[in-house]
Amino acid sequence: MKEKLESEIDGLKRRSAHVLERMLEETDQKLHDELEQKIEDLKQEYAGKLKEERKDVARHNKKLAEEEEDALIRNIKDKVRKLRDDAELDEELVQQRERAKHAEDDLKAAEHRVERARNKYEAFAGKGRRED
Image (cartoon, rainbow, N blue to C red; front, side, top):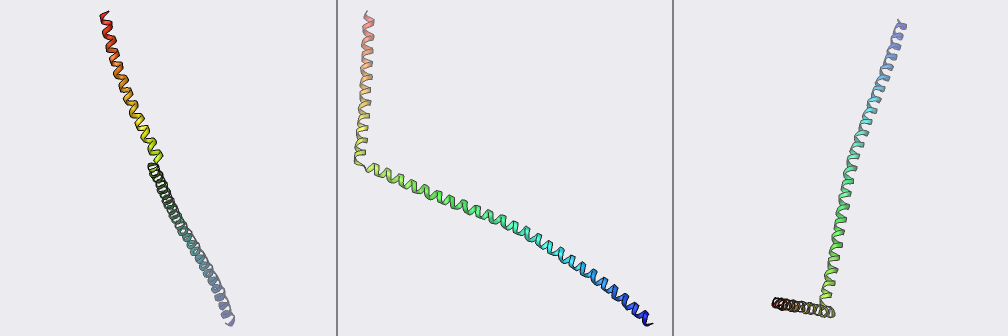
């Protein structure tokens, strides 16, 4: 009977050891699978966050570039306005503009006189031909 009990105990120990090993393997596999899933989830989350962060950086850089461009344009406009104001206040330039305006007016008046003289000449020349 003692041998029978020892045999049964040995059988129970072997089955228990086998069951325990199988449980450990299953638990190990389950933990491994969960860990793999968590790693994959984190990779996807990181990829999404990285993509969004890149978009944010691109938007920020675009905004900075636009602000810098606006500042440069304002600066250039201010310089052009100052140069224009200085040019308008430049006495020599003002005098040259006035002389140019007078010359233009004189030219228009001379052209008008030439046109009137041409018309008179043509009218006079036209009368002389009729009498021939």
